Length: 181
Image 1 (cartoon, rainbow, N blue to C red):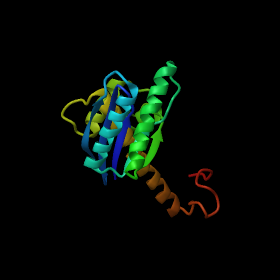
Image 2 (cartoon, rainbow, N blue to C red):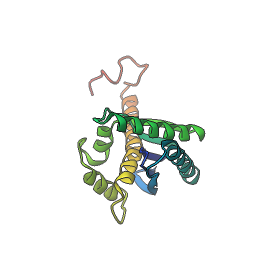
Image 3 (cartoon, one colour):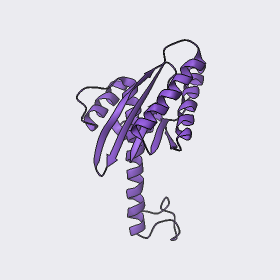
Image 4 (cartoon, rainbow, N blue to C red):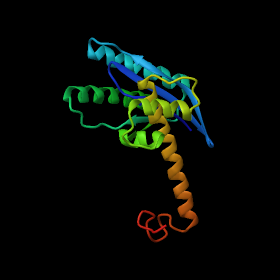
């Protein structure tokens, strides 16, 4: 599985591609799209076209995105929502499905603590992907989103396999969510 994670932003948008091959986590590529300041429509167009280039270059099978959250600054929340929409549109243009995760889920999946700070996320990403140096915070957040999707999918598959072996899969009586393991 190859996953593109996006840390949406209209000034700086982070992106990171990871491949999950068996138990190996492989860093394929990462970076930032520096849209700067100025006309918002031009910045969104730049983010869109750059994400299309990343999608074409790295051919991910999935896109992972941080889910919206309520920010203190409503204007910032609107801008992040616009950047998220651009990322979703780029994925749709290439026929790639989008999965969304809360910031807490992403941090918990890579750091083990849902309220980790940016430095902890950077260090965890560098360690998990054997990077020679810490990635920029926006790229680290994007790589964390990609890893969250891959690791969550792997975990869900293992749970489903384990439950089907125990006769607890859906369609065989009790739901696995209500079964005692």
